[in-house]
Image 1 (spheres, helix red, strand yellow):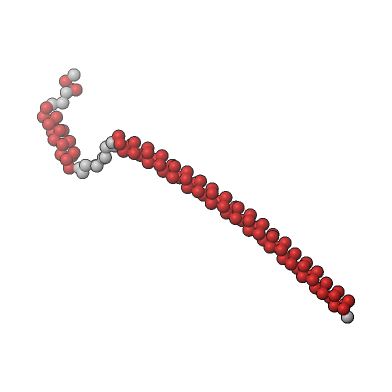
Image 2 (cartoon, rainbow, N blue to C red):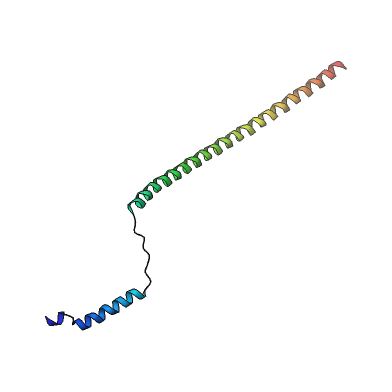
Amino acid sequence: MQKLFIAPAHLTGVCAILLLAGCASEPIPVAAPTPTQSILSGERMLSESKDIANLAERWKKGKQLIDDGSALIREGKSKIDDGNRMINEGEKIQRESEENYNKIKI
């Protein structure tokens, strides 16, 4: 059992070495978390997740507006094409009528 005990002379030397080694190294700053920081972090996470959800909703609304606008443009182009066909047909009818009128008159 005597081998388990360290002699006081050796114990003093070991303590001195550990003390010098501990004092010679630079301390590592560690911020202790406070309870308010973790609560604020949770509130911040909720706020940020709500902001992200709002962004996603706005993106969806923007996409819907783009889709609706594209559909209106397609419909508008189709109506313009229909309008141009009607104008061409009307001009053709007018031309034929004028030609027939001029044939009858002469």
